[in-house]
Amino acid sequence: MIKTDLLKSWQIEEFGEEQKGILMIVWLENRTIIGKKMNRGIYAIIVIGESLSGEKNLVLILEIIRICGKNVIGENKKMHYVVSDIHNDYQKFCELLKVIKLSKEDKLFILGDLFDRSDHNPNPVDLYFKVMELEDNCSMIRGNHDEWLAAYIFKFYQMPEWKRRKTEPYQYNTFRCLTRRLVEEDVQNLARQILTWPLQLSVQVNSEKYLFAHAMTSKPECTEDKYYYLMGNEMNTEYLHNGIEGYISVCGHRNTANHKIWKNEKGNLIMCDCGCGFRNGKLGCLCLETKEEFYI
Image (cartoon, rainbow, N blue to C red):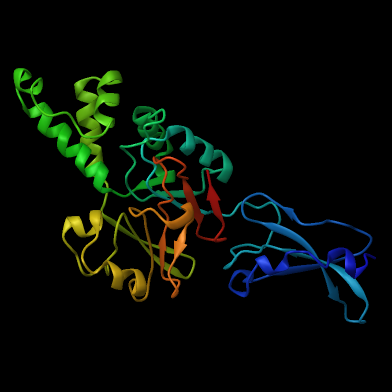
């Protein structure tokens, strides 16, 4: 047996009521496991519980996942992750993939602004090919910086050679980085790929309905102007307060305070641009099943 006072400070409160979901409870004797965080969003916690006889025993609570799929230790569960505004930071993106241990069954949603900024060691070429390498494991949303880059690429290569030398350079570092390593055909193919990325996605994860867009979401049946999704509009304050009824919206675009993922009071709007690409900024990522937040 373990005395109660050894576990007084145990952080059981970090798993709120909304996160407990379906629990599998195992009663153990003569075994001590203290707060081990297992892989893939599965937690093992020891707390003091009451047995049927009233004696205190160890309780091993498994699967602290809001809506469980299968309550089996070690069995992989498909996880959905959301990240936004990577802004040319290939190094942080690779570090994030290692931290979340993205498997072949998982899905990663990138909510736009893959490109531009990140004056410290920008690497849009390797970042782009890394994202393409993930194939079906990754879905891209188009951001305003992605849109601007594609527009500049098409405009630039439609000019005759002599005019290109006199045209105003792209305002961010991405085009220069691309043309140093890629031939014209590859750069234009990248721009074409950007324009295939949707402005909004509607996704259901277990019983929760999500809307993903770069700056603002809309009801799926109400298609808005392109720049509504890319930049937002004058209704931004009302949107931040109310979100979209019946959905959980997840967006990027606006840097959050303290470089942390932000949620409105209703819990139906999540903003996850944590300032990557800026000095002291972070790359933030959210797991939709566990609600766990990751920061690089």
